[in-house]
Length: 418
Image 1: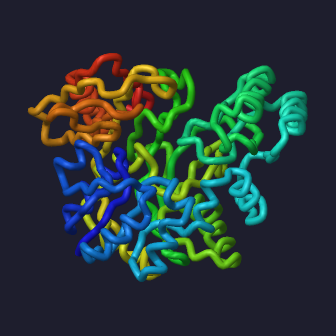
Image 2: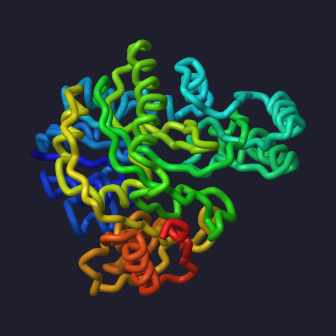
């Protein structure tokens, strides 16, 4: 079995690493760390014809698309039209992530529990809605409707912050066209968790729940990022809560899409908030989460390939073997991330890693045979152990041995759960 993984981040490293235990894996374009585990081919995720030709020349049996951008613009459709099995939704299904306004409208139409919201393509009505929300005693969350790489969300503590966020997105165009439409929604209080569900159109199978840390700094301070760390399992999320989320959040959206003629084959990432004992859907993503995938893949014993292939073919999904171990992933980021940061900074990684630790590379490359940074999130230090506290301790011991100028990482990943 030959598998092509499309992408270059930590998520793709984790997927390639796990799938390579069951298949021959090629990654395009990959990164410095992925290249140490499997073959990488220097093709951009936007080079659709190049990727298609690679599939033909290598007789690829399954394509697994990692990032959302190529899905949003139709890579999966192109592959399917060429008769290639691909894990990832087509362009219509990918609108769930490509447009938060559309996604919220789908939630409303399908009766999926979510926060009260309004979607606006002009700043003044958005400002009025935010002011009315604050006047009624609620705080708003402002979201860029388009894809802003996980950074287009501002959780507001007062009206001034909400007004600033709307102006920053819609007038200053901080996120470009992604912020031309914004969603203003009521802020819910509680705790979040991520549910990654493998979907084959009608059938679905959920992987272990993980909890993500979005803010840049300890104590959930600082700006939103693509994710600074995750852990699994999440003790606060029971099996009953997962089943409830599947029944109220996963199944209804798949049913709705099917009625609209959309055969959704790929990952449905449900970002969920538990508030006053009830689960609400905050957002849908149409791919594996990052860094949730790094943590979840550490708990997968086997069966991932069969599950993804069945989903790609629209068949019933066989169960995936899951370890009882705990896993923790801590992201090491460039100084300044998620704002401005330097690239091509030398990165030092210890060679004597413990057997329970795996380093997943994200923004790395080789320059003159030396490892250097090439992005905001650079490495994911992922550890497993019998307990969350042991896994956490193992991950941070390695974090303290990583060396590159101005690097930073959160010190509180999983701290409240051990």
